[in-house]
Image 1 (cartoon, rainbow, N blue to C red):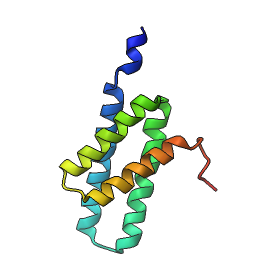
Image 2 (image 1 turned 60 degrees about the vertical axis):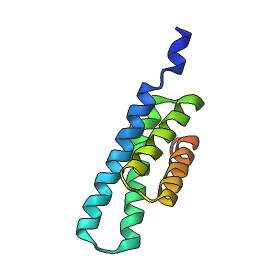
Image 3 (image 1 turned 180 degrees about the vertical axis):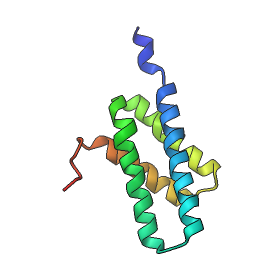
Length: 106
């Protein structure tokens, strides 16, 4: 039915799952406290790989992508992430979804 196009539960669940994955990886990396910049880069790469594996196959339209981004960002903010970090990660998430599969890989 046409109303199914506006059902955003799948996108919201995916956004929460991605944010929880990032937060868990960040807390594990903070316990290790090794190289700060390489650790952050690894976290971002891990997040982008998770986007490609879990979210891209859902083939979300623009309305659902907006819900995914909003849910992801708010889960980060509610968990104590810095606003600038949440903004940057949300932008990266949307950019990753807007690229064609395999476009950023060498």
